[in-house]
Image (cartoon, rainbow, N blue to C red; front, side, top):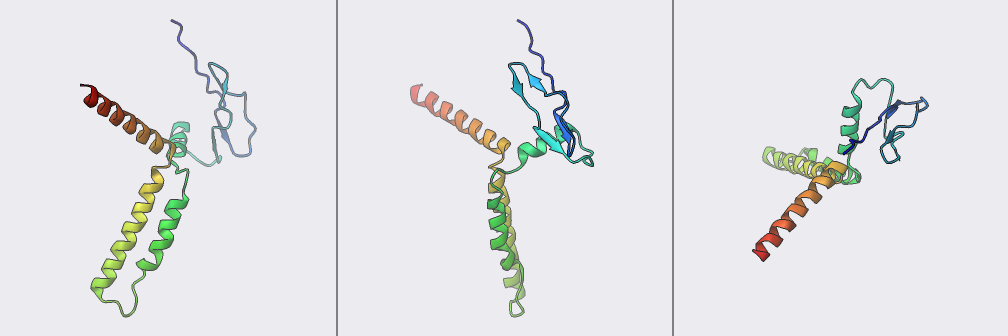
Length: 130
């Protein structure tokens, strides 16, 4: 069986540059412009690709949580120290929950969720039939 060749020439291009030859994966898949980076970004192509795959597709979830948490994070002049701590904890928990929920919408987060759901479905089917 022949092993397929993967040509990633020109996969990463600097901002403002024109792509070199279009990278082609066996089967004719064009990956031109998959990872674009500013010329000053010193990270490897793999590092930039992982960052892109971990970037939430719906960042508004985290933005909304921060907007809700921001007023809670500011203690008032008449707040007791205990109440100021409760407000700070609530603000931090709200912001953290928004960040976690947004991370589930990244391509890697969605893939992990789908794989886990598939595994649990297969386990459930095995228990029903066996």
